[in-house]
Length: 260
Image (cartoon, rainbow, N blue to C red):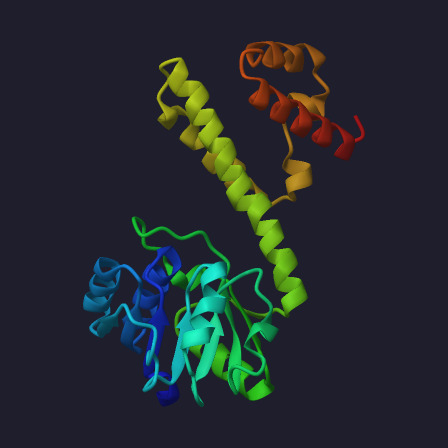
């Protein structure tokens, strides 16, 4: 292990920080400090990673080799007003925040962006999580590659513009898809159908795109241009105008993509 990364400070104790701090700890790094505005969260994560905790940003990370801002986008700017990284390598984990947010605020800085959805209730196996990196110079980028390589087998150099579009794509692929699951769950619950019935379909839909492109994997009434089924579905949604509008919008878009 690169000894320069034995001491790590994590700012944040939310979904990403919860998973990342534990992955780094399991890899042998010393997570010496955890910050959160919520004392219970900071204390709990620090106990797991055998470090100290704090709810006060001032003075955090002073003895750390690397400071990881695993915070919401809005909180990063606020944190940088209080934290003085000195010579420490400071990184954020956001998909849509440019590297240049650190300019004139740090000497050594970068981005450590894991492309995954995280939850405190479900620990993710980081070994398969793509970690996207950017830094202000080649030396810092190589340091981040070594760090990322201790927890993941998928490490990529991705610049700010690429990362912004990657994050946009991830919102479509993950967040929007999950919202569709939520709508499906509501529709099923309203008719007394357990959501478990849908699980194999969701798993197969996700799994098959590892072998074929999403375009070729598309099925359903829209790609078949099945007017009878589409009309029936729109009728079923007549008392739910927002969902009906969403169904029609997505159906029309699939049709246009497939020349229907």
